[in-house]
Length: 162
Image (tube, rainbow, N blue to C red):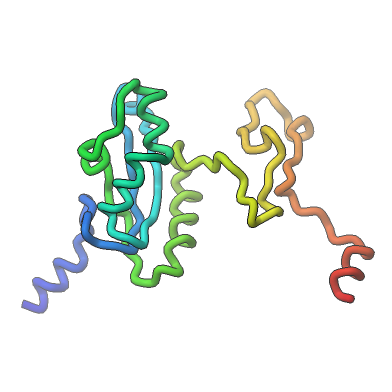
C-alpha cells in the first residue's frame, strides 16, 4: 500500500486537473502551421484551472491567436484538450517565479509582453526594442534598449545615499 502511494505520487499527470489550484500549465496550438511549429503559452493560476481557462475564452494570447492565425473561434473544448499541467506548487508566492523560469527556459511564442509593466519603470521598453535582431545586423548596429543597465554616476549615488 505504501509503495502504491509512492508510485502514484511520482507519476506526473499530463492532463490538467481542472479542479486543482496553484499550478503551472501549458496551452499548445497544433492546428494548421502550428502543427509543425507549435505556438504555445505557459501560464499559472492560483484559482482552479477551470476558472482560469474560462478567463481565456474572453481575453488572452490564445484567444487572439486562433482567430488571427487559424480563422476560428476559441472554445472551451479546445482549451481543455490542448492544456497540459506542467507543475503544482503549494506556495502561491513561488508561482510567479516558477512561471517566469518556465517561460525563460521554453520561450513560448504566445508569451509576449504586449504592454509594458507600468509599475516597473526599469522594465519599460523603447518602441521596437522587444523585436529580435535579424541575422544580418551586427552587434554594433543593434539598438540598445532601456533595459540595459547603465553604471551609477557619482551624482546619482550621492542623491541616493543622502
